[in-house]
Amino acid sequence: MSEPLLRVRDLHAWYGESHILHGVTFDIDPGEVVTLLGRNGAGKTTTMKSIMGIVTRRRGSIQFQGRETIGLPSNAIARLGIAFCPEERGIFASLNVQENLLLPPVVREGGLGLDGIFGLFPNLKERLRSQGTKLSGGEQQMLAIGRILRTGARLLLLDEPTEGLAPVVREHIGATIARLKAQGFTILLVEQNFRFAATVADRHYVMEYGRVVDMIPNAQLEASMGKLHDYLGV
Amino acid sequence: MATQALFGQLLIGLINGAFYAMLSLGLSVIFGLLNIINFAHGAQYMMGAFVAYFLLSLTGLGYWWSLLLAPIVVGLFGIALERTMLKRLYHLDHLYGLLLTFGLALIIQGVFRNEFGSSGLPYAIPAQLTGGYNLGFMFLPAYRAWVVVFSLGVCLATWWVIERTKLGSYLRAATENPTLVRAFGINVPRMITLTYGFGVGLAGLAGVLAAPIYQVNPLMGADLIIVVFAVVVIGGMGSIMGSIVTGFALGVVEGFTKVFYPEASNTVIFVIMALVLLVRPTGLFGRAS
Image 1 (tube, each protein chain N blue to C red):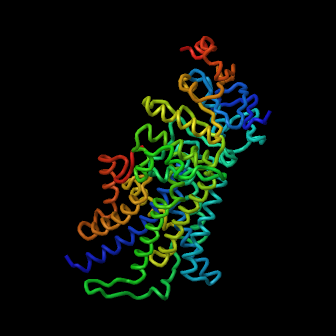
Image 2: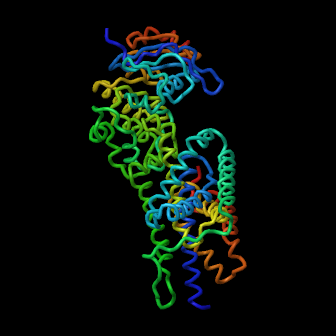
Image 3: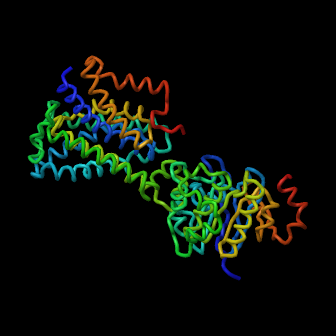
């Protein structure tokens, strides 16, 4: 049994005075694609932002490659090899596509080169001089994922990468996630759409009220449909 | 209308414009990244002139050394302010930063006035830049030509670094979304400190340039800073080229007003500010956020 790449134990987090996470516990093994499922407000995004150190008021334990990160600022956490793609994508309007792509510093060896990124997202190559926010929603999502592949980070946190995208673009993102997994990336995915999640993930953690309440291996997803409907209220 | 007077005022306008541009550039960069309206900017400009004066009178280091050292000294002073005071205010409304830096400006200017009075201390034009050129239609003092050319160069170099380099792309990105830039592994708090130091250092540099023209006076920044804020409002917060162009242009407008309607020369910039705010509240070059 290999040691988990990410080990989260009894994670609590607060936004100001509101206590959002109430003891989140889960593991991600190297090379896995794992999703966080749950209703709006269950704490999925907050969990990601706590791992990344963006939510600063947090308690518990988050170990990455055996190293405790709970006391580190987000820039130090990124330097360990974790990269974040936010739900709102975070494309910078004052930077062109190339500058956006080159912005995140390389923190480790082994990241994709620009050619590798253009191999996944050929559209970006045509638009290097465009202002970042002039791209279509799908292209912005590709840019937001593409730019963190350069950095050499081994754990990617993708917050709702398919939200608001056309089905064909969603398929492209799904295929990309599969290719990244094949290349050895470990991915934590927040998804509202569990049908999409089922096509890419190895395991699913279900969150409710700031806790992980269940874990469903992808193979058992069909059999767990009834349960899942209850959790997600769909 | 005597062309002599016209060109004379044009030159004075360009000189004033050079100072407006350098100071509003620093204010704009600081506001963009720190969300602080740096009211101490005028006092820091004055400090640049005083550092030049001290370097000469205490250590014998002349103008050229001051041009290098004074911005560093004033910039380090700014860094100390940022580390000890300003960094506590970033999560609060702009108003708190304005009040703190306004208070700091009053204290700094008060201390200097207490020590050195308000009549001003002389600072000589460096020997290499005395004299001037007779252009036929006017006499161009060499030092004034130097100030315009040098400050234009500094402004354009700053623009180039911010808009065209990797370092500048960090600055622009952090101005938009510091949290995300930090989550990419960039030490944004250190960048904020250095940016404040840079903006303040730019004010110090302007102070050295001003010393031979306006004398070294504890209140030299107090009057100027009000006009510079109007320039920033007209140009639009956060636009680098906007600050530069607006700074020089308004200096020239002010100069021409002195020729054609001298009574309005002190108010013309504020009238323009009011008009711009009515028509384009984000300023001529500003982006609506």
